[in-house]
Image (cartoon, rainbow, N blue to C red; front, side, top):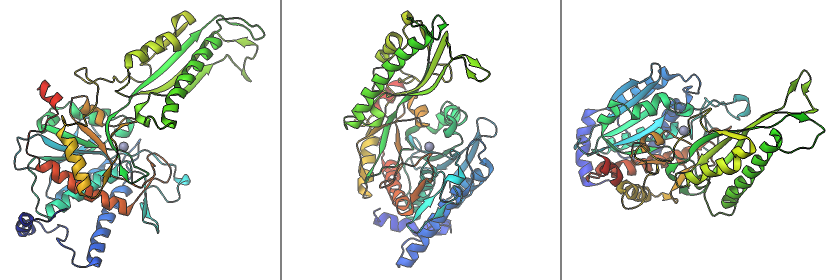
Length: 456
Ligand SMILES: [Zn+2]
């Protein structure tokens, strides 16, 4: 972070305005150590709030976030688009409110944890001797939510004033699909009035020194295929039984799965670039009091698959493959793609692939790259997120959204046992966000994605 003359002039004013700012300059290392330990303890406090699904303590998390906002002199608002599911919206007003705003997005909820499988209690936020902070949410994604706040705290302390409005959003229910939070919020009048130009949301940890950034995500298609056929005696060999028909499909699906997996194994494609398909259930057989009737070939058999389709894939040809190879009517098969979950389309509200551009048509991308570099970080090649995040709701509107959680040299432990983030990586991430927020908030061109501009 550069410390220019203009900032220095602004500082005395800010000091008068609020007494809770971080010390301006740390003259000694012990002083900076103590300010670091305060930053870490604030992170621990947030991690210690039990916001695990299915019963997150929203009262506590909302109170915590609102008190953070107060200490930073940010405007705060709690919005319940569905009663009992608060979304906390904080605002740092810019000097040119007509420019599209910046939305720093995170979710407060976390997935549950099996306490007994952890080395340290998942809601204790214990720091071990190597500086690892163990907690559910340390990677996904309370880290990011707090880093936004800490970066704002630093920037305010330095006297930085944003041109654009900066919004911080803490959503309630990403881990269960985001339907009562991000989805409704993205379609609300409140959101429209924010005039958002760019969204930052979550990414993934990176085991090497490069930070990962995501410009799209795969769409889940949950497919159930069903075969029917004449029942018969268990001793008889005949064609077209339900089991045989289903097995042929499973063999074909497995070949396809292997071909996609081989591309990853050979290093030709990243995880998010291929179509993944995994069997989730297999249901067949005629139950008997002791198990299954063994001398009977059943007349029905079905299997369920979790398919993830990148927006770069040819969705039509995949649908053809499903109809012709995996569930062909001529083999007495049927398919359902919306039984458990609506099939998520790979195109947005305007029929275009749901991707955020990472070329010159999207100025935010270049700003992000530069800002990360200026803060001493390295950015890897942009990727497609392998699973789903709330970012899709904003991309669906045609808005640029980048998935980014600054965690380098860190194993990917989201939703895993012993999820941790090293405190040094956490502190580095704050510097990265200082640089990004400063760069985004200073950018004074309109800054809309070209595509979105067409639609206005
Ligand atoms: Zn997450």
